[in-house]
Structure formats: C-alpha cells, structure tokens
Length: 273
Image (cartoon, rainbow, N blue to C red; front, top):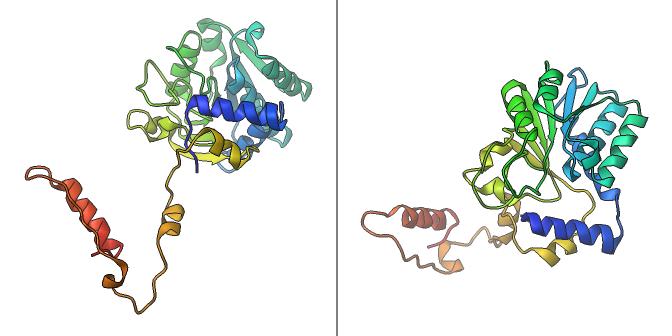
C-alpha cells in the first residue's frame, strides 16, 4: 500500500482525471466508496449531519450525503461557507443532492452555526481535505470546535479537517475523528505521532486509480504483515538455522542498548543466527 503526500495525491488525481480520462467520475467514485464504508459503521436509525466545505472535500461530502440519502438514511447537509465560493464540481454535486430532495443548510458565520448545531450526535466531516496550507479560518474553526464538543460519533472523509496531510505539527485546531475513511492511499500524517491519534480507526477506499500511476509519483509504501510475510523465504521442515546464513548486528552503547536488543530479538524470532 502506497503512502502519499498532498502533492503526490494531487498529481495522481490529476493524471487519473486528465490523462486517463476519468474527469469528474473520480469525485463520484470517492463519495460512493466512502458511503459504502459508512454503512458498515452507522445504522439507518441514526440521523446524520454531513458538514461540508466549499472545496473538493465538500464535493466528496455531497456525494456521500446523496448516496446515503438515496438508500434510506436520515441525512442533512450543513454547508460551512458561501455558495459563491463553491468549486464547480462541488456546485454540481450539491445540485444533484438538492434535486434528490435533500436538505442543505448554509452557515456563513458563527451565529448561523450555533443556530443549526442542535442535537448533532452523528457527524460526517467533509469540511477540509488535504489542501490545508494555513491556520483554520472562521467559520470553519467554530464548526470544528462544535463538532468536537457535541458529536458522539465523527467520521472524517479522507482526513480529519484541520490536520496537515504531510509531516508537521497541528497548527491550530482539528477534528478528533472516531473513524477516518481515506481516499486512494494513506496520508503521511497518519503515521506521525503528533497527528495520528486524530484519525481514530482508519480505512482506505480505492476509487479507480491505476497502480502504475502511484508508482509514477511515489515510491513510499506501507509494510503490512502480508507484505512482510511475502519477503520471507520458504524453508524445508528439515532445515535448521545454519542452513540460512548468519547475520551480524553492530550498534548500541552502554547506556542505550534497547535498539540493539530489539534487533537481536527480531533476528532470533525470524530464525537468524
């Protein structure tokens, strides 16, 4: 499984949409794939509030909302930001949701947010995606604070809003998600101590990217248990440790022997002498 930076993910998306020719299908695929995962986490008995921003993450949120609404979920959308700021693709998917008789509340300031934010126990966060480059502005900051304070279940789309997607510390405020459904590939901040806890339990959904496109833009991969096991050679039942070579581990010092001890134990557990 590949791990990507924000720039790498943008390049992968752009190549998939423009060169391969997916166009706007990628956003539709993303929202539908996320919605399918959400059905495994949240039941139809739970009313859901989908908080969307004006960028592409908000577009994913509108597709999620429409997909869940059309299969019988109790859905409302709270759009945080003016209609004039909507990206064209987001505007398109918002209209589709409205055409399906979905409900959208538009909150452009703190007062409106406080008014609409009542009894929002289950929240899908699609406010800000991987494009964050500065501190969170209002009214997004207020929305994040209210969600963190009031919601009992938060599912973030792609990345918890407010987190950097790459290396780096949290600069202001971010969603503390219970679940995150990330799109395409894990982001680097999933593995950084200062940010990984914000993701909660996370999963990855495939939305149509071809493997060679990931290979074109990144060589960073996550070593899973299955991938590690594939690298281990098969051994005959009659084999002993002397049949498979010897290893030499050099390192450590008198007052910091931990890393050396762990390396030796790992070697022993894999049958190395």
